[in-house]
Structures are given as structure tokens and as C-alpha cells.
Length: 352
Image (cartoon, rainbow, N blue to C red; front, side):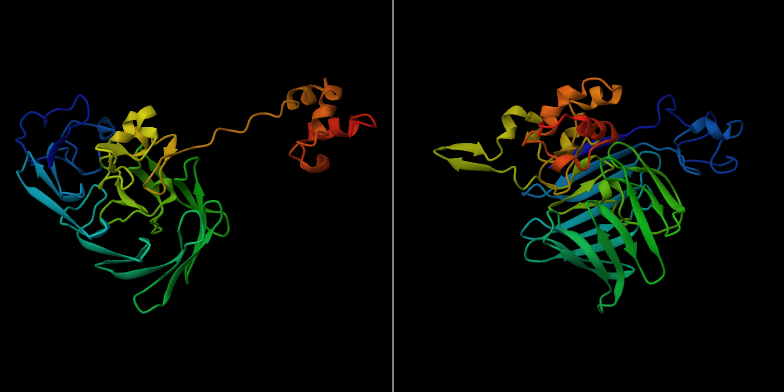
């Protein structure tokens, strides 16, 4: 199967400036800014990068895994080919790419997995990193990284989210946003040493600091060589906002002479019929840490039904039955907000 996609220029800038041929920058001043153009006029364009239009084609194997991506520049007619290799369990084992820039590096990268499908190593031009995973957590997490000889490279502290990373030379602390994307890194002195800004689908728009950090969008590992985000069962490509392999759960079964689908959500959520879609195309409110199903961010907890009255000093007596009810989730008034605590203390004898 093959698909075509266009990468268009920013709105309103369809061609090179008059007098410049396609693909030529002769005479441009500074960092790629044409004469007479002010530096701020091309907001969103990287420094020194001339916008181009590309045609990108994608090829897939019979199992629906991406096996080739060809990116062709319309300005220079140059082609850049990235190839993907998969094992018999549809696990990505190697990516080879000569394309530099746009979040991608050069060369190849390979992966290895354990019998449960958890990634246990990654090898690229800089060497091999082995992962020691905690498989007892609801989501398998990396606890330590070692080199090929078993020498410790980094240790991670895991809470509800990724808390910190410690190496031989430094400790850094992670600060995520509501969907888990790392927004800041701090050192032990609470000094901000790096910041990150993403678009809705996880493409890194801006960053500060020089710390090498691979935990980015939704707090998951991103390979700088490939640009792919590792989401356990599958890999996600932020540049296209799609997974690069089919949903392994979204497979039909032949039952009673007809094909049926396993997921009951398909009727009520038709978008799940698309096997490559990421988070129902709603990555601002939904995450998919397993690469198998979407998880909506929980809404803020509702206000205690007595809180509003307690804050105004009215209606405390009406809340006594609630505060002393057997089903009240807080043990004997501990952990109450100051306003509710005052109401609790003001309840008449016998309320309990």
C-alpha cells in the first residue's frame, strides 16, 4: 500500500521571493532571510531553513506495518528514504534513515525485546543502551539504563509519573503538564535547566537548555534518531500524528460465518475503526501510553457538596449528617479543608 502526503509552506508564503529560482538561495543575507525581509516576518520558520514542499510516500507490509517512507523535495528533486524492519510479532527491530533535520538524525537504530514484548535495548551509532524494567507497575517503566557491558548509566525514580533521573554526574527532576508531557527540568537546587514546548501532536516546537533528555511528549521515550515515541505496544510518529503500525487489538475474528470486531467501542466511537489513529485525533485531552487504547485525562474532582456553604459560613448544620455519614470518605474529619473542618467541629453533639 502507498500513500501520498504534502508538506505545505506556511499560509501566505507560496513561492520564493521574486528573482530567486527554485532551490537557490544565492544572495540571501544572514541566516536565510532574503534582502529586505525583517527577521521576525517568517515566524515559525527555523533559522537558516528555506521552506520547501515535499511529496512523501508510505509503503506498508501485509500486516500493516510501515516499511518505507520516501520524502522527495520538489525544489531539488532529492529523495530521502527511511526503511523500517519488523519481526514476526510485528515489533519494530530497525530503522535506517539518511534524513537529517526536522527532529530526525542520520544512520540506523535497532531495538530488542523480551518475551513479553518489552523493549530491553537500543543500539545506534553511539553504542548500546540496555533497559532494566519494572514490570510490576501498571505501565512497564525503565528503572535503570546500562551500557553493553552492564555498567550503570542512569537510574530513574518513578512515582505517579517520572520523577527524576540520576547519573554519575547529575540528578535532574521532571516536571510534566496535565497529559504528562515534560515541560521543565530542574536540578537539585530547583533551578530550571531546560524547558520544552510542543504542538498538539507532540512535535517539539522550542526548547532551552543543553541537557540530553529523551523523555518528552506525554512523558514517554522519544528516539532522537528516528523521531519516534515508544508507547510500549507500538511506536508513534508525531510528524504525521499517527502510529506506524496497526492497532494489534483492532483485528477481526471469523465467528459464525461473519467477521466480528473485538472492541465494543467501535460502534459508539467510529474513529477507532482507523487502525493508525492516535488518541482519536484528540491528543490534547487523551493519551495512549500502551499504544493500545486511549485514556482520557480525568476531570477535576467535583466540589464537596457542603464546601460552598462552609466557605460562606452558612449551612454548616445542614452538612452535619453528611460529614458524619458512614459513607463519608474522610476518616473522622481528618484531611478536611479548613472550612469543612470548622463545620465538623461546630456540629452539635449526637451528630455522629
